[in-house]
Length: 501
Ligand code: HEM
Image (tube, rainbow, N blue to C red; front, side):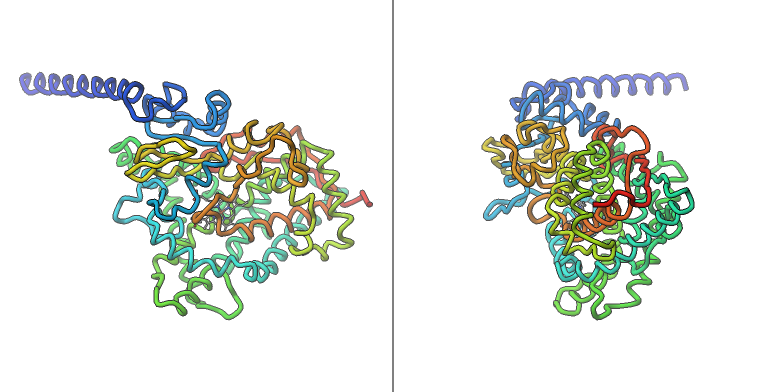
């Protein structure tokens, strides 16, 4: 027995020494011999994945990247095999059309999509799967379809205004709301209608559906997965380390999504109803190609989050900046109240004509972009030139929106909320660096819908209520982001409108 134990101890000792030595050699290799060694960046981050992982888990990766770009310039090595860019040219080189060059695809590590059981949806890494699903869903996002969806948007936004009205009436003409919470309700209810044909009734009940809560922790789960997947085989342990209640929530989400999806599928394609399922079913009818039932259900699970989390974040970020900048706020309020004489007049097509509102939305997206941290792409095996410099195959590359949009090399007074810059460009501004909905074949399919939702909601809110902050408001960018923003409460005081113009 003693002999076995002593052999085991020697074996463990040797293995540990070997692993430590291999680790040290790897660190030296990464710093002094790796093909990316000449790219600027903090040495510690380039030496192993650990610093990046720690930063991602801290929730402040967006701020760390911002600091590095200020210090090292437009391209920074942020891990042994990863580069972050903030240069306008990088959008074109990484995400733009590739013509005769091999595609720069999404990395497969973050979501482990090299596995056979990979999910097949519009966000799939596999380009053919992505393309097929994107074409099938396209019908739900045309200008015509968004015009059809407006009735849903108006009705749920109207219900939110009604609930706010009831509260102000019950509270001596004023009420206090956490607008971040309500915008989550709103975006989820709209997403529910367009995905499953029924709202989650969050706005109606003034309470989050369990899915809204799940979505808030969804980003953290993704961030953890993205980090752990770099340390194979640790990722295998993750599923055992996951707390029981989180596991239960995930199972509940999958089951509920399936049930609701099947209910919507059973309704089939209804003439004149171009929601997401309708669009896919019509595509299946018209094209030889078929999107199988499993794929349709998976797409619905994806879009319910892609369409709601982002849009509610953007409106939260815009209102955050408006509350910190009373002059811009008053100017916007003026524009809206001068343009309409009743709330019922506010439509998407009329709100689109409001120049300052459009500028405010862009400026809010610049300072608090919902996709603050990018999903890195991978350079094809033969390597590629990015921003005029050679990048070897297998390198992860991305344009990270938060550091890009807040960089003094792209925008003058980058941390200031100046909507006017979108009407008359400020000297030193490079608007071609601004792509909050991405660029190229993976750009946001929901852009038109998101713009409609943001315009109508903000215009109706500011038309109907006098809005002011209940507390001090910190810059949106100060909070944590775990792929999705933490979204701290933003308490607003709403009063029945007194200010008239
Ligand atoms: C202000 C709101 C929004 C912003 C800022 C936004 C931003 C983005 C970005 C940056 C991407 C690219 C992600 C990547 O591949 O790296 C994306 C993709 C996507 N977005 Fe949005 N989004 C918004 C609203 C919406 C809405 C309302 C929907 C749908 C209802 C939606 C559905 C999608 C889908 C399905 C994709 C994947 C597209 C593809 O890979 O072909 N998004 N969005």
